[in-house]
Image (tube, rainbow, N blue to C red; front, side, top):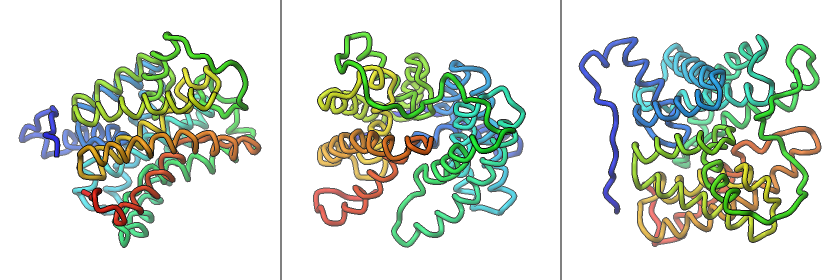
Length: 324
């Protein structure tokens, strides 16, 4: 097993009191989008969201705060709350609503609060349902809530405002598959940013720096997943525009981290397994996009969830792999 090289914000004695403790839980909640219960990593992630646009930073903090506060109100185990596990789905829900419905509308702010509350309830249900199989909830609460709302939104005039220019909308494959060096560099970083629905390369870079601060091995694994996603998409002839904007590779980044560094014992076998999973999730990303396209749905992190779920379920059948 590799040695974990990481750095986190020190917790002074005052951090054991509210509201300072809540601030740490907020940062960990944002960082848990990429599996990291690390406040320092959360600072980088929050900075990345604000770099994408101040509204996205506020939405991310709002969603995380609402999800975490709901967990407190409902009496959820304090260890889960302290690790940020009750806030990250709310963070993603709020950012997704801002991206798909437009961040400057009062209805979007209200939906972000309601969606984060809904994600907290769904998280509780899934924790209970998945416990017998020792499976995490992944980002399934986010995907369920965000899918329902964004698919339904065009049917409600007070909610639908035409969406945002940063929305990662599904598109029919078209255009050249040739990827130049500039597009390649953009793709490798955008793959990391698109986990939060942000396609800007500098936003992806900040997210990646946060991962390296939290755990160097996880950061390297994220880079591996991004490379696998780009290579797989390019080899299969995906349009270069979609690849460069990270639309095909972000699920590969999540799968690579999940299988190569987070849920399995670290080593060459789990890394190889992660590479296969990352490639599979890239293909599944296109399939899920095509599935949702006719009725205006979004790919979100469904490919990551499905791929990781099945790959983890198969682990008991492979003696060279072990769950953590």
